[in-house]
Image 1 (cartoon, one colour):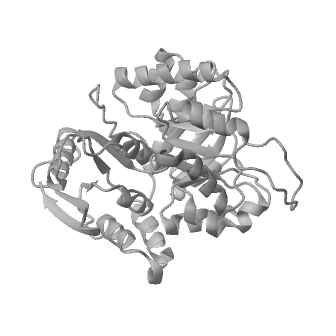
Image 2 (image 1 turned 45 degrees about the vertical axis):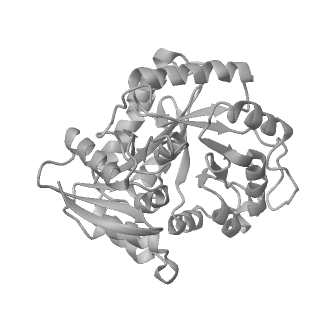
Length: 382
């Protein structure tokens, strides 16, 4: 890593997506957006040339180096332009020819972290995208926008194959509560699109999603000509943090516990739940495996969750693992552990937790590690 990572412990647990548009693509403004709480930078490929987006991503990388704040890169595909009436089924492609060119010629070379699929209808659509990605398929998160009746009817097979879901208000034939319940049970991050007008949210979607802890991340859709995007983002981030401070986490966790499908709950999810709920006095949770991230986040712990990512040469894709953690609520990715053992990674997490004031000598933290393919809980008095 060419910069020292800046850890933002006091930031909102709810993650933020912001579109880098005309007023927000300079290095100076991107730095302000990172400081204001942007976790994921959205590149909207419904407009703009590859050259235009290339200038923007170069500026983003520069701003990341200057601030030390980690940020994921999202490519939002344009998708097919044909729209049909309610209930009508039409065989639309998930990716148009333009989308494929955007992904192969721009996205992959620029090491993007997330692709938003704006036209998903069935599970096999995601198989086609992964075939296109080839050897990069494991490193790029696929986020499915579920906004049509066919997708809603095929939600089970889509949920089995997607990495995250994007929900938008008012989608015809889509039962959002059903989508949320299914995604939560499977440990799939939920991103909620929120419209911003005049620097303010236009409805109660944001407060409701934050207060009931159903969403991991909000995609803030504002006017790209907004003169002060950093101030708008700071306002939304502060609102989320204020709302989060009033959450009764014990009540939320009890609700989640009752809703979990225990007969079919995987062991990884059970251990994640134990890590969050069995040790109420723990000051932090430290995780070292990608497989545990989303399940821990779904249990909605009240304490910081530190995802320690090894940067050893034997682990080539560490930057993607860290960036994917930025989609899940409350996860704080830590890069810089050039360790080769899990023990060293946990030790690194403890050191950062002490340095950032999360815990003090004698406090309890809980480490969730994977040993020989099995999750193991390790309570530690630091």
